Length: 184
Figure 1 (spheres, rainbow, N blue to C red):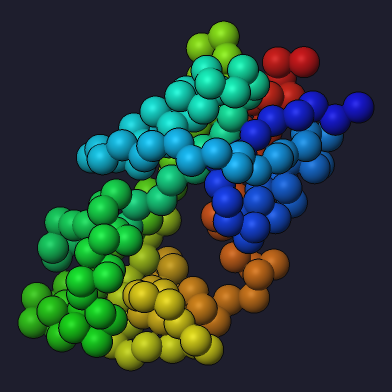
Figure 2 (figure 1 turned 90 degrees about the vertical axis):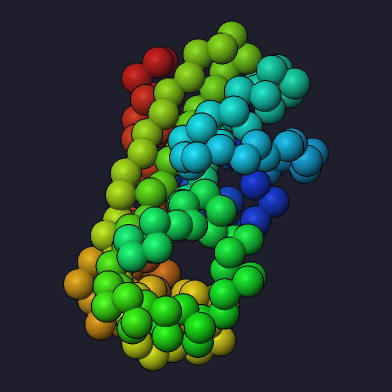
């Protein structure tokens, strides 16, 4: 029988991506329907850890929470405040800003936290280097996604097929699944 763990997300795409990893370990993930507060913090790890611990305590079950931060080197921001700043600075304006600053480099920091009701935690963070392109690419890009190039790619993340993207983003889920598997 698969082990039941909650994933703190309402995003069906995130659940599908996570399940592509956890199913290999016979771990069944269920989305959490309840809203849990997301703290404002300086790192994705702090946000993921806090939310996972709070949800595990309240639900009385193990919980996983993932959080991404995007850092623009030239600006030193936005980090965990990406979604707020992305709404204020459209892609076209970001292109102009980065051209003036002559630095289009950045990085994603992805943090995944696992918390059990008995307060055991496991955390994993990794970075993905990236650059911002000088033109918006891809079909129907949302926010800055049409500008973001992972590693030294010329393609925007909107141009990656899903099967190519998932192994990049799922590293945290893989680490957590291996940890949970080692507990049994």
